Image 1 (cartoon, each protein chain N blue to C red):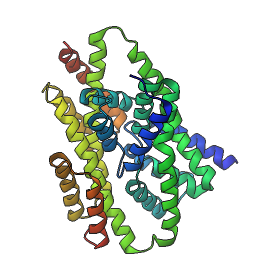
Image 2: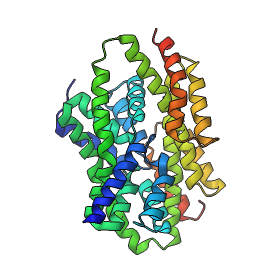
Image 3: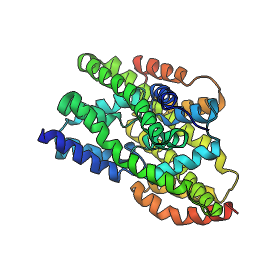
Image 4: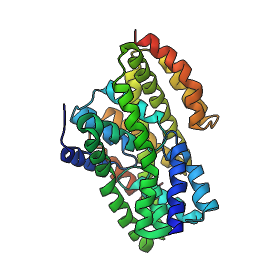
Length: 173
Length: 176
């Protein structure tokens, strides 16, 4: 019970500093769960990270699996809730404030600047994640091919997922 | 325009379940390209606001979209839709992994899918970048933030703090 409470509080605090999302602070998450709290060992952390990347759904599922590993189903639910609730409440009220803002030019200024920052953060995050998970030149080639494929073709990106799984299965990645 | 909590729940369940390697590309695809609930510019702006707040951005986006189209109940429905099915799937995968995770083929597949997933996130970034081409000075802000985060490994809180004044200045001129 005390363990579960600790999980909830630690991950809530982690969420409050996670600017740019969970993957942006993956090293911090690793430090908390492997070194400090020992919820999970290093190898399992990396494997669960890969599963959360490969599975459909938000990348924060890494956190779900950390909770799962430490405390079973209750841990999975509480860990997910902990990482979501602080920002949900913040954004709910922030969005309201912005919606009620009367001054049109200020409103547009906030939206345009936030939009530009978002573009930078998304591209930077993709770059950083690629550095963490792509182990060889073939993996990078697959990443670049995926980018071009999505930008040029109108085919469903699930074809790419299949291709990635196949190349990995055959031992190329 | 309003949507019922049930409709939001189902829409975000689909977004969550198709989100291989990150949900963001699929959220954009569904909300902007298919359902046309948001324009490309609105999507960028909304996501930008979501990135100003710490925590998982895609959950923030679900709160924003849910709230805009269905109030508090819409926001709760959107987040629940986004999370419940993928949580179930990932726990089932963890159970499978306990049995089959030691095989090299399984680990290879996971690596291959991850490499594609990163590409999908980057492609979303490039699509969003197209919308910024209407006001070129903003590209300076974008370039600075990318270089700070990737080359110099600044924490993202710092990246935001340092680039925000310049972004606000350019945005103020763009909004004229």
